[in-house]
Length: 339
Image 1 (cartoon, one colour):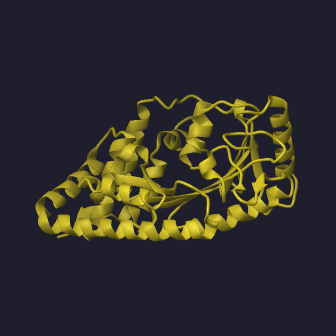
Image 2 (cartoon, one colour):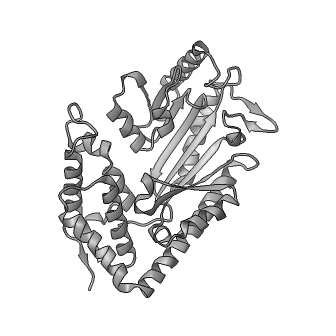
């Protein structure tokens, strides 16, 4: 398994058109005009890669969920209806654009691993190109204006996804969250807290340039991961049998289960990943894949799209849990506990 300080990286960049009210307060026609202008810009040149513009009304629940699972669409945008909304994906998934959501425009970028700098480089270029077609609302004192005042300023939200099962197991995440809040940062569980997967993000955008926010998130994340590693060593030192038992049982379940929920699968992979990083187990089937990558492709919509007939299958199908278990068995087939 590959390891990284950041399990995954994500950015959101919010912008609004200066001559129109925010989406929740504006009439439908001006928003439709804005959407048409933006779509025309996306379909014109020059862009290094193509934009795929989606018809939101034509998307099924499965297709929408798949976009959310891929980190290309925010859950809030997917779940909240609105006027004249639009959506597009850049370069086959390198970035995406939500139109007339909470803000008029929101660029999104998501990648596994420590990729915040690369994501900012890409989103900054796309943002500059969009600004040639849309007049952004900008105030010399407050910066870029957004529907949520706390996001005014740079308009950037930075998300660092971390794998912190030991801190969660020992109840130390609450203290970490309080410490982060004092620095204007937030900590939230991903996937309901399964596997100790959490996200660190900035709560405000004022008073700091984008590069400083990125650096702060990276530095803080590095410190939290060091705490996680220290707690893991403590658990293995003070409770060696319980620690090995927990990891061994997870490995056994992953190798022999025939029906597995997504929540359970994430917990099993998380424990196995800890075992690999502690040098307790070997998993040849994951030599070229990160634990987060495996977790991601075991999400419900991913399984339906990649392993089932998406035309006739639903997200409620019991076959999803059975296929997920089969995939786990395949990955963990050659895994073993080190002597």
